[in-house]
Length: 339
Image (cartoon, helix red, strand yellow):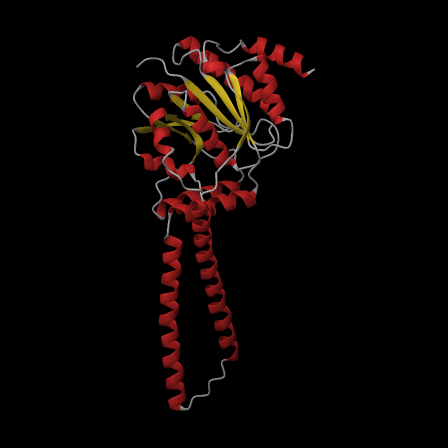
């Protein structure tokens, strides 16, 4: 296999604190792979600014001036992590043989990218970065994350345990991914549906280098719920089963009441009656809410609004001939410009 053109796509949202170090580390791994002959010298980094409110975009522009291999897209507004990632993948697809996606926080091991590319040379179209352990997570986050993956798998969703969005995809897999037009985007579930040869690379996840997590508990729960409802109708079936069970219980209660009436037993039962009404009412509201969630997703799909709008972009001129600057030179040039 000839040397491929690689693009590393990095979604960014308010990442000014970590971005200089992220660019430095990714530039170094890109330069090392070029020198090793694993990729071509017109491989690039593509940072996608997802409507940041800090200096993320200005930093991307300044690093681009210092090193044309640092490129960027600026979305017109915050579109969400998955949509920002998709924007970068679709842009990189046009001029890349393979694309690696990684978050900007440097928790994923950048050195694993080299292993991704080696697996690509071996003939794999998709390479998943999978965490070896969750020792860096809090007990709560570890328990909820593992519970989420187990729940998704039990619901029939083809998802890789302990894999986020750190992966390599070949050009042909990205071309097939483009055919998926759904608005409710959950790439961790969509990518395995493509069915191309795939493998895993295990790595140890690190602590966030700087800044704050962009996925607090509320966002994590929303992301998990979107993933479940986008790929499985099991919750709806569960509500149907619950309704059937309650129907059976109600028949039993009716028989009990009739027998009590015929035998002259005193049925006081105010507490049990009120509790039953509250319970059934709660189940009904839960069912309506769940059905409404699915209807809401249908509503979003039928409108077919664009997932993202690109406001600005800075790309390498025809993606040709300029290898990354040595790391030390890049840092010096960029610091000079920032001052």
